Image (cartoon, rainbow, N blue to C red; front, side):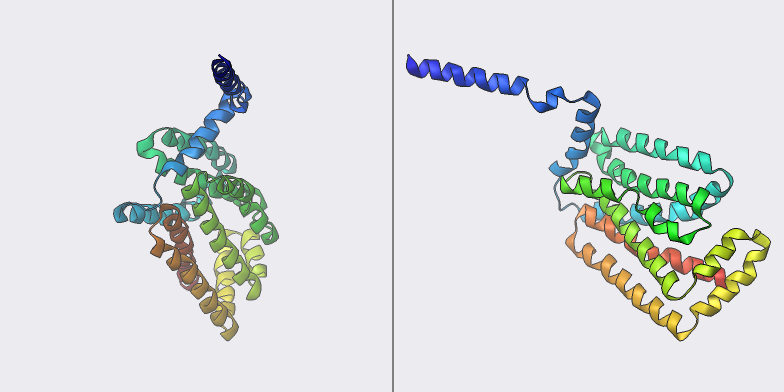
Length: 259
């Protein structure tokens, strides 16, 4: 009798606790957001090699997109470029709502932060290089918050890799004293950019400029290659974002040399 009473009490208490779970009191939107982000934690860390290389290739592509597609768009239509961030976020959650496409939505969500930062900086603040890194870091608190909860690892690690490449590139600009050329290029007409680029290239070709280029390229190579040995999705996204920085910087250097 007593055992039955306690058993009944325990069962009912459990039911009450379940009914009053904090999640039930949260808005449905927050609940759905958490559910979507948490889905990545249930995926296996080690995945088929083909998929990891697809993630790597996608990361390289997504780092190149803001540079070669968003840059000209944001110069002429900054509001449109900024508004597209909402589309990327919407599309990322749409993809994340299906198990078959969750991974790509996760990656796209991390890309959305890079696109947002690019839209803000190159649209309105490009004349002041000192604002570049603070604006590019706009998604850092969100990325850290998600990773602390093991949410959206692929996209957030992609964003961190992209941010690391940006930080090292900007450090090079400061070390080699290219910031004045940056300001000049942003203030003159396109027809007058060539002489400024040639002067900047001369600065890069000094022993100081070449030495730091080699040092930072090695840092990027090490930071990008080592994660690839782990064969994990989020590390391939990180490695792809970091290594693509070398590709993008090299293309900019070639463009400056041919100016």
